[in-house]
Image (cartoon, rainbow, N blue to C red):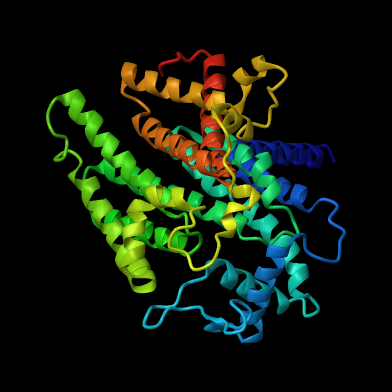
Length: 423
């Protein structure tokens, strides 16, 4: 009996040791999975209504149902818009659009309906936005880890999925396209940064680098079919390369094109895949030009010139101007500092500025974190210009700020255990 008892104790000790090793080696993965589960739970918490939340939700419900009723094929003609004529969903002679959200919702519903025959589409759409929003934790973690470390990645995942502005747009029962519009650009940035890091480290454009570049172009193509404002991600990518070349040229006092030739070729590959496979054949040459002129054209979002009908965007609340910098900071922060200006120093917006200062200082002192500084700087400054035009674009702050907060608090935790500021 004693021998049996002692052997069981040894087995239990081995089990505990194995468990500790699993947590130690895979703590980041475990944390991200817990974030996903908690995020989805909060978005579905206490949803008790037998209907969806808003009018746009029913528009997507109707479009997904068309695919379901048509055995997985999206009808080429929409009879419910521009009455009484309706409208072709694909321009004459063009390649059909992907319509990622409609197809994702319809196909995933048909998959689950095979296991739950009584499931209705509107019921399924209660869960879809919450699930897609929770999945943002994965690419947010990847971006944070690539730009800094695992701890920053986990914190970035947490701050992303629990950002108040993001939560309010991705609640259960609200299957608007916001969840996918927030998820896909994070995926694109994750794929892009992985490609960028690989090529910049290896200093060569091998088969794997070419594959990653093509994958970046495909992800960009899906993104371009997801939201008309896709161009801002293209500008972040191009801006990072241009700034890298400019800064390295200034430091070395000679053109840095040769040192970055592998990156330039990678950009040429993924932009070619993106423009000539996903933009030109689907939308035409005008959309190709728009990809690069988007920052100029979107400022006319409420313009009346050249329109056959009045522009309803003039009266849409989300398209109104945001005011000055103070109002922009307030919209990007969960902290109300109107009555207590000191709170401004601890707002997410200002903490993001602290992060940028730290990354810039670290680069000057040690030549580290250059890529993180470039990407976050462009990703952060761009939404400021967009939010001046319309308050809707303030949500674009959420993702770079979440990643910046992840880096900031990861650095704070490092310094707590003795690391210097410039490391």
